[in-house]
Amino acid sequence: MGSARADRVPRANAAAVDFQGRIVPTTIYKICDAALWRAAERAGAFHGAPVDVADGYIHFSSGPQVRETAARHFAGVSDLMLVAVDADALGTALRHEPARDGALFPHLYGALPMAAVLWVKPLPLGAGGHVFPESLP
Image (cartoon, rainbow, N blue to C red):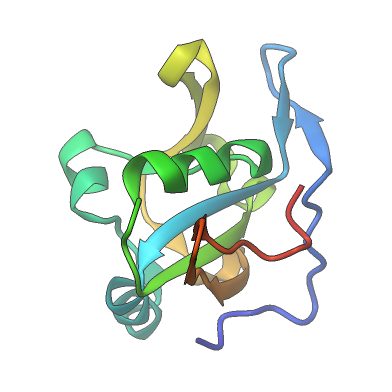
């Protein structure tokens, strides 16, 4: 799944301030079915999973949110990929909007270009749920 960008360093703990003065992450994450992600790589852009298409935007999570997203929406699902994305590269199409419990979640109104992808890693199932890379916050 060769989308890793050797020339770009993930900033999992970094944050920026948006136009409303809110602190927002500069690296965001997408959990995606592996076959769907491979198709996106071939196409040169990710246009969303069925839930994204239905909602009109691509759902992402910050580092602190992604584990709960996996547990709530992907429990028991295998053959997933974890995609790290440079939020700064998405421009104004990325909005941080209230979702569960009023927390701000990143939503992309448009396609995800492969140029914004920092890395892609398998998200395997373990005995207690999905096993995340150690580098995640």
